[in-house]
Length: 451
Ligand code: ZN
Image 1 (cartoon, rainbow, N blue to C red):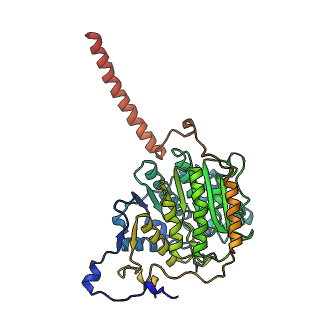
Image 2: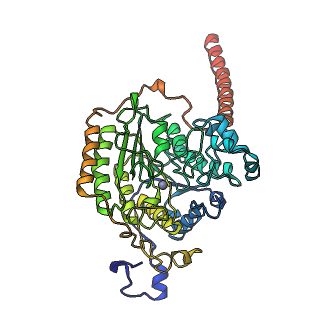
Image 3: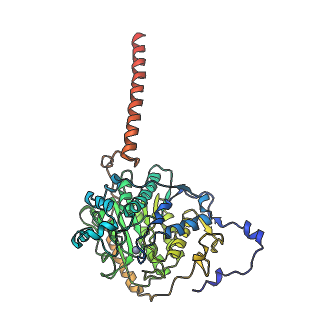
C-alpha cells in the first residue's frame, strides 16, 4: 500500500522537538461543545471468531482518540446500559425477552423454526452477553441524545452505535437492537424535525422502515444497491408512504465509487434537503464499510472523503448525534472514526500515528492515519448514472415545499430522557417542594388575613 508523497517524511526532528510538537492543530478559536460517549465494556464481546463484526475495533478507535489527546477537547461520558423499558420504546416485548434469555447453550435445544422466528443464523448468531452488548451500545446512544436534549452538547458521538439494520421484532445484518431508532424516538420528544443521514455501505433499512410513514423524520441513505446486495432494499423509488411520502430518500450507488464523485453527489443532494426540511437535529451514521479495502466493501472511498461528508453536515451548525455502524477492517474503521472525531472537534491531526499507542503495531507498516484506500475496485458509477440519480432525487424534493411543523401537544411531556425510577424520584421531590411551597403560601395568606 503506497503512502502519498505529501505524507512521507521530508526531514526528521530531534527527540525534544518531536515530544513538544502538538499532535493536533486547532482549526477554530471556539469549536462546538462535543461529547464522547464510550463504555469500554462494549469492545469485550465476540460474535464468533469467523464473524466479520469485531467489537474490539471500538477499543482500537478509543486508543487512537486517547493517543491523539482528543479527550482534552471533549466531555467524556461512560454511559449506563439502556434499560429494558428503553428498548421497548421500539422493540417488541417478546423479542426483547428472547434477547434477554437466550444463550448459546439454549440455542442448541431450539428448533430451526424457533430460531427462524427471530432470524438467528450466521449473520446474527447467539453469542455470550448478546443482550448486555446491545444494551451497552444502545445506552451510549441514548446518553448522547440526553446531552443534546439538555443543550450540554452541540455534537454527541457514540462510535459503538449506528446499528441501522435491526428491526422491531428481529435482528438483522449483525444488529440486534436499533439504537438509532431509539435515539430518534427520544429526540422527537423535543425536536420537531430530525434528519437521519446514513453513509454506511449498506442501506439504512431498519431506520427507514421505522419512520416510513412520518414527515417528522427524513431518512437519507447513500449505499450500494443492485436489488440483491444486502439488505436488498434502498431503491430510489422507496420514498415513504402516507404522511411520510417523499420523506425517505435513497441514493443507490454502484461498485467502486470514488472520493470526488461521492463528495460531489453528497453535497449536491444534502444541501437542498437540509434547506427544505430544516431539521432541528441531525443523526449522522458513519458506517466505515464504505471505505476502500473494507473486508465486506466495494467502494473506493478514502478516510478524508468520508470525513468530508461529516464535515459538510457539521457546517450547517445543527445539533448532531454522530454514530458508527458497519466497518470490517478494524484498523481502518478506527482510523476513520478517530479522524472524524477530530473533524467534529475542529482540529487537524498529525497524519503520523503516535508511536506510544498501545496498539501501534496494528497500523503498520505505514503508521499513517491516512493510508491510500482507493483503486481496488473499478468505478461502475458513470457520470451519466450519477446525474440521473441526482435528478430523480431533486425531482422528489420538489414535492417537499415546506418543513412540517408540529403542535407542541404532540410532543410527549417527559423531556429529559430519564428512567422511570429517576422520573419517580423527581416527581416525589417536586411533590415535596410543592407541599413546602403550599405551607409558605398558606402562611403568607394567613398573615394577609390577620393584617
Ligand atoms: Zn454496512
